[in-house]
Length: 122
Image (cartoon, rainbow, N blue to C red):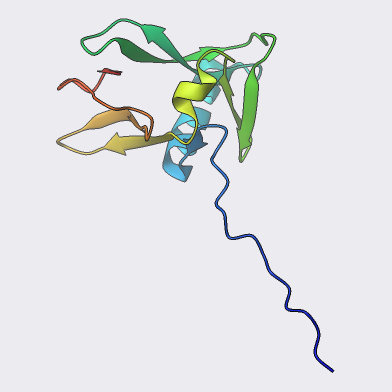
């Protein structure tokens, strides 16, 4: 007896939020511990400005805003406001601590162009 073959969808779902690497999550956790506050979360936003039209903002925030997209990475909450979410969907936040680069980096598949300094995109 033959049974119909089951088919699974192989469509990849588009990411709806940012991704925080393990290295970046550890750094964020350490920085929050230095602040001595457990209510802080990493807020990632996109604002008008910079060479290419839009610039990233990363900062600690205790606020909860209507429409925030909150993602937990091993105890580190990353918050993206509803206006920034479409620009940041699928973006990966990492932390580099090398001689040629230090700080948080954002690899954003939605960025068509970026400036040489890496602070802004369009």
